[in-house]
Image (cartoon, one colour):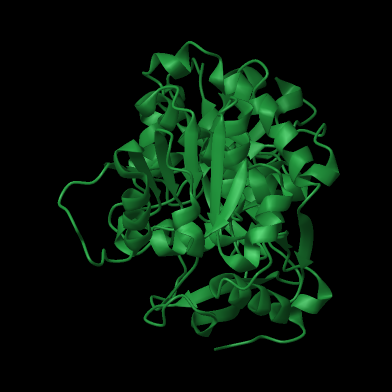
Length: 469
């Protein structure tokens, strides 16, 4: 007992036998001195109602540590220790409400990183990938169907909001007993330098699976709760894979789930058409379809990206949007619509006729172009792919639960990375000006399909200027 007692330790009085002292039993106090030569400790009573502090000289057997108060004491000391000198400065990428999603809506903010409260962590956002997926999160933020992705990391100013990007972060400070400093996390990060976030809980990993840290995020719908879970990264991860993981892991997982839903809904159909064939998710989907030996996988893309899509050798043939009439129409076929273009779907429907069995629209329906020159009322079955809904559904279907699909997803992803390394180049962005140019190219659909962009706001170049639209 004596070894655990220290000055300032919160304790509970117990075991006093003399009648004049028994009323102190159960009261709380603070150790103020000791041990004396007699082995006793001075304990100052708290909240006892005395005009002056009441101090008792007690043997170690007459008090015990107040564990609840001790935990609060330790956390308080951690918070005091965490106070920074000099203070940390955050740099955040933000979008201005009412200005759309073009580069004109971009703005940058510097602000002091707040101190930690109890049960919180300070994340250093080491790097994040920015792609059409992050841009899509912003778009989905304006639709009720998909809720608001930018609500994950709210910004204090009402007229500003932000997207979240897949990235890596390091816990720099922590007041949560189960999340130590130095923990590396993978998950949905804000486009910023730092983020202070309350920890909702920790999820131990099952055999062969990583642990997770769950962050507390307000107003996040239940079906999007998984985005609050940050995967704890082990030291075994090879550093050269980090850029590829944040650029492609979520993309590949979504494409894999699209393939699963297609398999469950249509059976072993052997022909598929994929629009936006040069997009990374479309490439991943083609990889998944070819992995299960689909006989015909055709791509559709713009003339500018035609040669790139063909060079990946993931499609049996790639056509431009101007060559719809050249698409083979002698097989039962499904159409995977990444372009969200109703007019294009109609053209394909007319070309394929009764051989078109199924359309899967990938993306929020509100952004589909309006149908033009509608010639008939009924079209092939159209399904809007929603990843969160499929995650729930896939737990129940035998084609998933009884075929080892999760293991196949884990192991095939490594092969996909190796395949992408042959055609894709990682471009690092470390400055405000570089981010704006990259974003403008992505938004304008002028970025090269052979590039992925990994960003960090910690380099010296990032603070040379603050650009405001």
